[in-house]
Length: 311
Image (cartoon, rainbow, N blue to C red; front, top):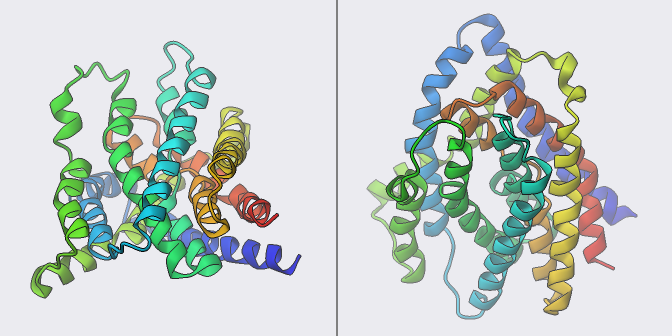
């Protein structure tokens, strides 16, 4: 019971930290010095500059070790399975013809906030090895959300499908740049590496400030009235993690690796759901409501899923 409460406290503290930054963005919009219109312009900075630095930095700070590379690859496989399950479950649930919001529902259902929620929680529960395994999920997440995620969010925009746009985008280019540094244990010169790290550190604060301005322009009274978000909670926070747990048990993963995989699979809807909604002309108010509600619910579900792996 004490372990469960400790895990709940860790997950809860991460959500609170996140929403303190959201509250700052909310207040900034209300006082008029960082409004939603300004935030929309900042969205491209996040998309084309900050997020690529996050991806490259994740490769630079992950140590390639022969002892742990097997577990790392299994963690990546588990993340591919988790995203695949999300896609399979979300497609029939949110496939209403002519509904422009279906892309937002599906994205929020498939992609979790692995960078902000999973990594700190893994560090608190499992230590550095857990963070190392969860970083594999971050790599898979970044690769998929900038390929499948972009394709998904572009649906209904009358944009002609282009393989070039899926391959030549900030996410994939960043993975291509960062991967050799990880594989060959290379380091960037400090005069380049440190700016990359510093810009990467802007990701969560800037994303949350932008999120806050969108929330400030949302009718919060209707937050609990969107029935689709409860389906998203069911899939994102319960169904996918339980199926991933079954997959880990089937392959007889050790407990630490299983717990790391479950933490990654249980992360609430990605904060960049809002960023992508803004980028591809979807309903940012709806995306904000979904991310907000699912993140709050994860305070309860995340410790529950971790507890299951300890049985």
